[in-house]
Length: 318
Figure 1 (cartoon, rainbow, N blue to C red):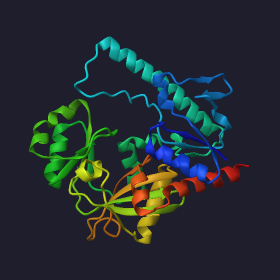
Figure 2 (spheres, rainbow, N blue to C red):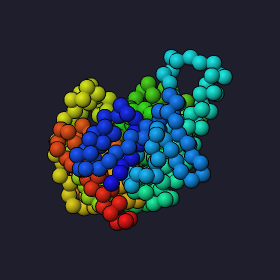
Figure 3 (cartoon, rainbow, N blue to C red):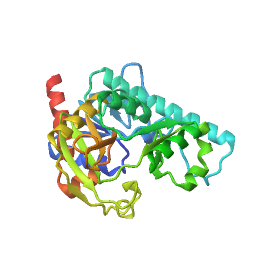
Figure 4 (cartoon, helix red, strand yellow):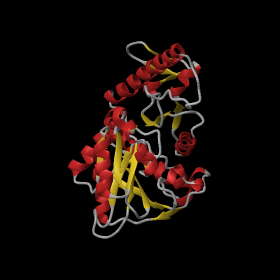
């Protein structure tokens, strides 16, 4: 098959997927949609999409790693720009995103297999909506409130004791609700946040591809959010095999299906005891999981499973 990979040219996971696909005998087109910011050409004439010299629809299947989202134009707080410059940059980013999302959604409408399909899972990247879907699915979740009402947040924290706070749309790490955060809690009145009871036990990352769990590991960490740990940030994280009870595996597959994920990175906590399902609680599911480090260190065949799923989808469509 001819595989299109939507990802930056310097993205290690996209490069790894390209190498794995070529090793299986497939042709690969790299389609770095975010490179429009540097002038990489794209065009649509009402029938065909062209990007970076490729006729996009000539690809049989796709892997979606990155695209220019409308809100992606963020900069460090110390960066200074005039209001006019920020407006210009913001509008240009919005236009790039409109082109990219139109291309991706049109490929879906044409029935092109894609991991993951933008239209299928984009809505559930909004964490409050994902929580609502998981709650109705019957998934065991930590106690949670999403609010911009400071007093409601304070009452929730008083009730659960130890609590954490995290953003609705990503872009910041989970942090503990401590005295410093409580002192600034009135700031949420104009921007809601997620407050959740703090759950002990190891962090478990489950990687689902299609209808099977391909990897389940416990991530060694001494920090609240393992991504903030020094070892993780240096690329020295350790992943320990963590076999799941069959009922928990089935739950993970149901979660991925409900959220439209062919590829899903599902985060669990395992405090043990009688809470949850066999002692497991579900935190969230990620539609664009970073799995390369897990694959390289544990040998889990995640990339191979993605390519096998795409190969099967292409064969079924012919």
